[in-house]
Image (cartoon, rainbow over all chains, first blue to last red; front, top):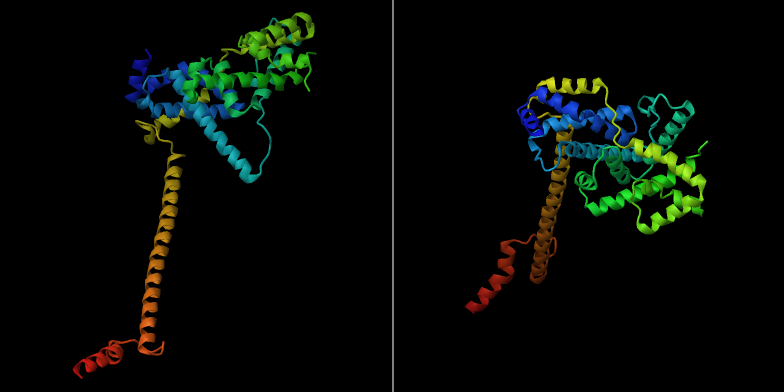
Amino acid sequence: MEESLFERMVRGDPASFREFYDRHAGAVFTVCYRLTGRREDAEDLTQDVFLRAWSSAREFRGEAGPATWLYRIAVHRYLDVTRRKKMRKILSLDFRGAPEIGDSKSEPIAAAREEPSRIHERNEVERILRRAMEDLPERQKTALVLQHDGGLSVEEIAEVLGLATGSVESLLHRAKKNLAARANPLLNFF
Amino acid sequence: MKNRHQRVRDLFLLHLDEELSGRHRKRVERHLADCPDCRSRLERLREVWRDKSGRIIFPREAVWNAIAERLDSPSSLGPVRDPAVRPARRLAAAAVFAVFSAAVGAFLGRTAEAVLQAGQAAQAESRLIMARELGLDRFQVLTDENVWNRLERPAREAERE
């Protein structure tokens, strides 16, 4: 049970923390990767999220599920880091452009039985969608990643972002419309 | 200006997630019925968009190793402290406090100085008025003796007479 796992974590039992990590690392890393667009950044963020979870396990009230709690830590850290990066960019006038997201290691692996051209096409569609997602406003992107990659409900996203459910619905609606509008001109189906 | 195909394609993701209102859904469906190109695009998008949902990527073992290393450090017993962040935060807080204190100090110092200066000016002004009344030169020192000789003595002598 998650509760007893937490009790053991609060007592400072590293084995329970490893179990907690194994249970949630994939979900947290997926969301971190989709938010940052870079494997290295996602790994740093994942590490940060779990260290903070360990340090603040005592503060976990159990109102939301552990995954929602971890996503909330991840999103707040991500938005915090993004704000600081943007500030540094403004201060240093360093405009190097968006981070690359074409990390082949994490690109989709289609079923081996599919034709290579079909696999290539699917990968290309996904790459275009991901790139277009990168350009969305931060809050739209965050809400969309939490729903699409984190599998969170509107209520859970509202909990993570500290917004009303109506605002999240509106954010998701705008995100999907914007994403389709940005991706469609690039989707040339060979 | 977007053409009708582009306007419908902008709604594809909302259509796939069944989040379109009745009016928009009907518009998309009507268009798809007549447009094989948009239909084909939607199907290919559907494969990727639906397939993406719930797909999990796992971090490398190095991520756990880095976490475990931090857990083993003495500073992380009990609640983990972030050594990279905490001292920087403390320094930043101390710097903010110092700047704030200096600002308040400077403000209060200036205020006190201004009050003192105002008091001194008022005192000097009253002394100047009194000196004028006594017929003294403005640079002559205004002493109790001057006041006595010029004001009190004539008044006492007049009383005696």
